[in-house]
Image (cartoon, rainbow, N blue to C red; front, side, top):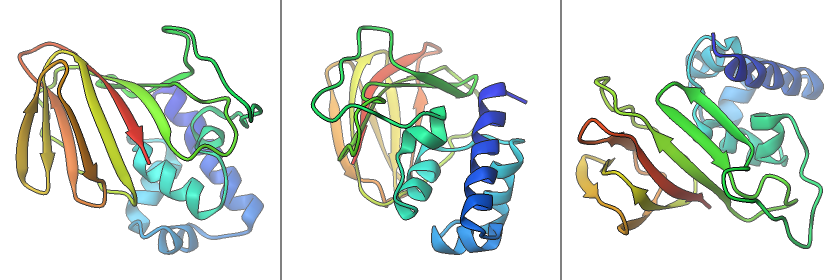
Length: 182
């Protein structure tokens, strides 16, 4: 099991314990299947950022607390130097580098996302809100509710993230893009 995934799973269990809720309560409150939530809390499977964001929003907490175990402290500005953002690798295929982890009460969550090439089928997820993706390097295949779009460096896409969506690196090379989740 990936150590970062294990730590996120521990924080999910801790949140549930503090709130004195059952796994079924959190799943129902966040419109997540109980099986999906239990897999996340066990730390035995990938945990999507969208699921963590849904849980964080529902319980009025920062996404950073669940992802990184730290409460943001800044409220005027927060500077992230190139390559120095707090990062988490959910799986070997996905790396998320937070660009605003120290800013309190953010209205959006910006990340540099790196997706490694994979032969695995594309996983679709959905979450409340909207999302913006801007490709920095590589080629990205995005599927939004069955519509496939290929983005090259400099291309961007803004979409309703309640629509089932997924992404995949193309051409056997990693893709790096800016993702802003609103």
